[in-house]
Length: 384
Image (cartoon, rainbow, N blue to C red):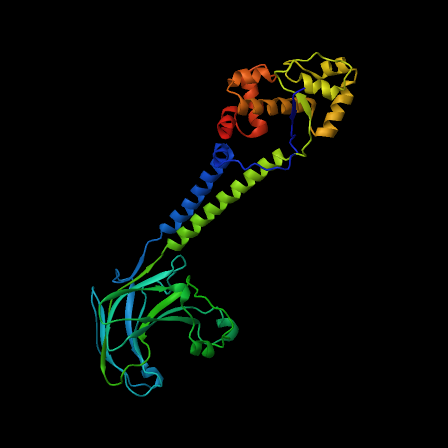
């Protein structure tokens, strides 16, 4: 007898399926498409926020100038002007206050606050003479006001190093911090993490930082202030999220395939289809099945009649031993033998289906794909 080794679905060996099988799965395809549409929708939502032009603006913001006279200083704004193209002022820093300062303040005219909740950058176009740094500040609602009193707003600032030439600078709103002196005045511990309340922004301030030479005329020209949303980081995060979902889906697909094929390596000796042997009714019913699986009409009743074992006992034994029913057991043998014929011969698929016991090729194709996740033609291509 020409014996073949059949591994049932409990085999612990794992054959990694190609991605082509993954993409042929309709659920996988639609899941990836749905995830992509959701992420594109999220990106489109944030892309829809238009830039807020603070200056030049359509009279939505008012510009004011200030100096250190409120703190006993003597710094002076020599001259200032506001046009449709620039905010310009010349100033001199003088002794009086510990850290002399001057600056401009810009706030909304229609409402007392402006919401920047969906924005993350401020772009400035400025030029300066006599100073190398400016202090850019946001004044937002103070969440500690009711608890600790004092100012009802919080000052978030950042330093911008500038040059005499007209240039654009970008400020990351999320990198702005509360000055130490402001924390001290408002009784906010340095350990308390505070973030700008961008839903409630009162005004923007820009002034000198690190006092230059005193009694020297300096100038600052501001050409534009624009609040924008940069979506580059969001786009990268969404791409990573989609790739992560794709990888997770692939892992789940192959894990399910592996669990479906997982087998306990049970060796069953059966006769190859080309071997013809006379039936022996008195043999064990498993041996009879293994010899007769290529018969198209092989049934539980026929095995029972030929072996003298009751159908119930046969079905129970197969279920307990091979964890499947009678029909599935036969199909496993037939598909295992068909795989050998697909590998070792050039027989047409229809002829192979008939030889291993299937009455028609379409039924053979369905059973083959159900047990192997591949069609017979795909299997033949993968092993050639």
